[in-house]
Image 1 (tube, rainbow over the protein chains, first blue to last red):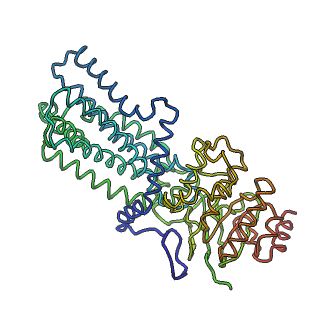
Image 2 (cartoon, rainbow over the protein chains, first blue to last red):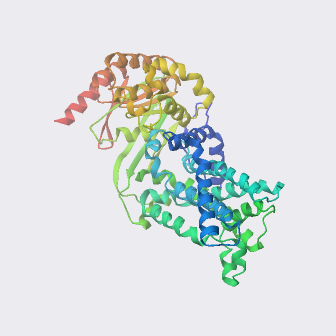
Image 3 (tube, rainbow over the protein chains, first blue to last red):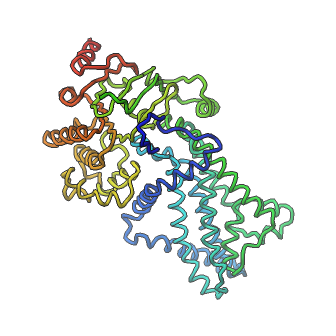
Length: 282
Length: 240
């Protein structure tokens, strides 16, 4: 809420213009960062509160997954590529950052009805804190990649810094994409069911079980597959572990960055313009 | 001194009925003809600085909606809400509190929604514990609280923040008589410090002793605005 020292009457909770929306959205988040922190803390605490191992699950789960994949793909299926289980693990971590942020953002208004009715504050805080929480958990989970790097004796280079970049990119992409549909979900809950399906199906359309290199060997169809915007963040993390910077066809990188900017623009505008009327459906 | 601090100008507000996807999009993106349940119908009034304004009316008459329109939680269909201060809404019995979290954690989140920083809230925790008289319960999950205890927590949080404009939705009726008296005293103190209070309640005794002015709402319209005694009379006349 604006500070108003003159004592003049001004409209309550005024709406930004279309062009002002992205800036206002960013401004709201910065000015309410304490609320974002508090909400992230609440989500994380409640998730691990009653678990004896607590936050240890954040690394334990991916570690067990890695062991499972290794058993499955190397031992059982006899895949000669020893790194393949690692690539799958990376795919799962990055994809779930995207997927959880996406479905979390889509239902961010409907799942916080009570808080919305309690006080007026920018509702963009909800998708933002959900996304932030997912990014933080994935960053912690990605720590299991460190011992893996040593086990496989891959070079330790400065390119490892691309790991967090890829994860943050995937989370932000998912959160912003979801913001476009969060208000719509208030009136039509079909939206959140649809997105749950999209996240499940997207798992196979995205390079989780396969890699960009495999796709490139498949000719034209493979090239189309690389237009998927999530290819870049996943490949970025994989290449970081291999000790390289991200190496992809230009079209693939462009598609990813284009998708990100489009979601940022549409997400903030649609969300800011429609959330106020949409919460009346809650 | 009748300096308006909140002004409602011909405010109408409707709640939509479930509709088709197309109707939904039309509703949230255009300001075209709205249909649905009309909760507020052309409501206009001023809230003046330093006054305690009461709002009474039957269930569903739009009392809570008026408060939510004042804070900006719900946008108006027509008309506008103007304010020159910062509104703090205290609504229901711990609305928005998470039951698995402790009183302390809920107090922190509640404070953050009202724009306070963690440091500010940490500094106020002692006062909140004192005022709420929750003692050891303050660090226990909210699901172990009684209804009165939740109300005490909410009231304690807003009261230590000394809000400029406090909107209270049916909270003072709960709690034991001793706490009720304490809350009443706190509200009077706040008003003395040039605070402004708007309260919705069904306890007319409390309203009569606190309010300078009462508005009687009926089916989303203001039917009486003025002297507390007469407003309550207007309410009972309507009952018959």
